[in-house]
Image (cartoon, rainbow, N blue to C red; front, side, top):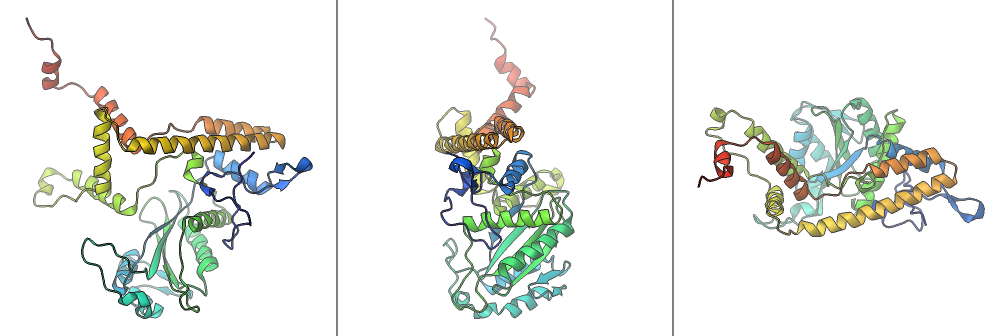
Length: 368
């Protein structure tokens, strides 16, 4: 029986009886055809075409959120590049300058939020205070016109938060991929006690919605779970990216310039991954083995779902698209953990690296 995927509406509500295992679903709810068989509609077929054609994927992620007024103001200053970039608000105002962040925080009356006055945890303890805002990033791949990303982000924010949750946004074009930083107040404006909660299903709905808004701007965009595309590697969190970027920048400095500078602290996550790599190179079993088993199980479910989808397409006379689905699944990359991937890269480099004098001495046969 074919798997089914929820077609998320703009309102963010899912159809009744929707599948809970959204991450592995492919086909939206189809209509019943002759004989009571499920048939794929035009929207579902278009979604499959975009996926097997590897249409650029949108990215929607929550990058954190301030838990006190000072933290929120600091983040607004950061995304506004300390007054150099315009800050657009939910009221349609554009603020710019060093005082824009302070004006926004004051206008939102964050100091009246109940969680604002909870004590800050001691160093090393988990911060359990409720967030005052959510920091959201809406991003498109390199080459996407930035003005279209901003236009889609405006509609996205208006449809999801207008007249409910205060928000502000800034467009960034300093990196190859244009993206919008969206800061949303967590407490509802008119219903005391009501808060904005963001769950995995919420993010899936937002990705679908943002992709549709980008297509309305004339930009090819898609939103499918990474497992369905054969991507097994999880994207790293922002703090890890920042640490790795800082380490690479430090390593590229001339030795003379490194003198007197403190090297950036390496990520503990990456340190654990490297420890796993060393165990892989030594041939020892590692905790990542359990992760590999889970990934292979997921891949089997994904392939079974794609096979069922191809069969439905053939029954509907879409043999050409079904053949493209078959080629798409056949080209999926091999399932590998991060430790296996890095260890394999090291082995490959060692295989092609020329032997040094000490290596030659060790490998030379001893004279009798």
